[in-house]
Amino acid sequence: MNPLAAIQVFLSMAKVGLIGFGGGNAMVTLVKHEVVDVRHWMTMEQFQEVLSLSYAVPGLSAGKLAAFIGWEQAGVLGMFAGLVGIWLPGMIFMMALFYFLRDFSNTWWYPKLFRGFLFAAAGLIAASIFSALPSGALTPSVPRYAIGILISVAVFVILTWKVGNIPPVVVVIAAGLLGLLLL
Image 1 (tube, rainbow, N blue to C red):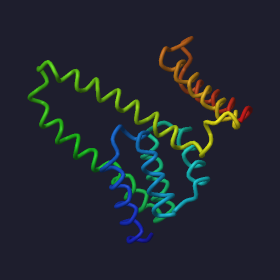
Image 2 (cartoon, rainbow, N blue to C red):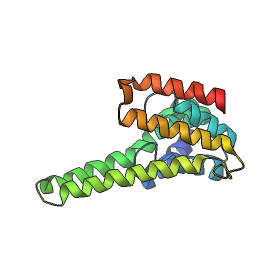
Image 3 (tube, helix red, strand yellow):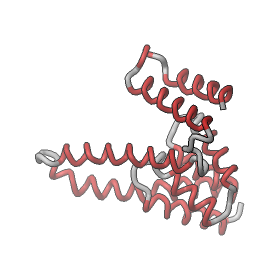
Image 4 (cartoon, rainbow, N blue to C red):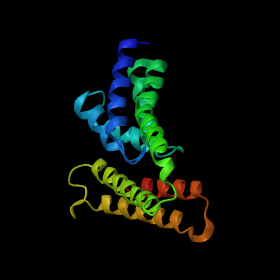
């Protein structure tokens, strides 16, 4: 375990946590930028592989990515540094926001404000998905990414509207197997 590497992981993930809004999945693009482009701890291919694996288990991807990156850079200490770094700024911000807004919960604008936050978060998640695709992925010359996007839309529809009451784990496993066969 290298304490200096753990501190670097903490600072990198804290930077992502400080400027990343919209939750763990929305921060994936920022994690990629920090880890692949700035720090060069991973190649783009390695990052995409780890990101794909992170979607296979429950939880938000940014936290799982931060833990894995920390583990790779500084062992167990780095893993904890990555997790604390990515979540601490958001936790502090949310506690301060809750403290500030708790007196306004009965106003007319309070529910509208939070409804707007939900739509913004959905947009950030969609942006992170599209930015994680390789360049040129959305062109007609690469139809396999179109198939991947169709699989994503199908999973979204099935899970959002509970089509056939299929358990989410079955939908995710089926989408993974379908992607394995088609892509």
